[in-house]
Figure: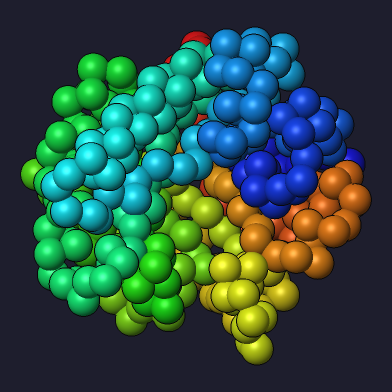
Length: 300
């Protein structure tokens, strides 16, 4: 089976695979691109991970994830900022190792409300402060920070940024090649302003990444594991995909699935099912071939 040329398999979709296994499964399933996670990269070591990625022939589409910098000033916040700087370096290294058309995108999840606090306004302000600290490092490394708004049910513990409008407002002080946003259908499908904000993101040149997966009720007890194959739920992929395409976005598109049943399925079966679901509900609304000469590409 050959996957759509713009489809990227986010490594979280086959969470229990090692980096070597993920690269092999993705390539053997006919994909041309992969999004990586920091933990499997760290297990192997950055230098070795970059070498294996380069040997795979796959494009690198993003590194998940950094962020989690909503805590007040102090040792914990300094450690978080330092870790984000390391993540920027990791992203640059991996993008340089990927096949032509790789994009140096680092996904940022803001973090929730600090323990013992109810200061949501302050937590959001500290996201802006962190971006101001990290933007110079990202610019120097040729990395685009991608703010990912998460569904509002995650505000308390994972992300105080819930909408594309919030993410774009946070990105606004910075050059678009330095700070952009991620459009993830799972997180923004419900937002009545989402399509207008996608158009705004396009005008501002800030769509760093487009991720597709579905929302299906009832949600599991662990709501983090509620992501489904495209087409298995209620997300209107036609409207979202056409809106993203209308902005001129021509990069790869990731499928990222957090789902216990999917994680328990053989990796190759998951890769094939992911490709089939993408072909069924996303690909019909695409018009552009993979970008191989983007100004943000590395490894070309």
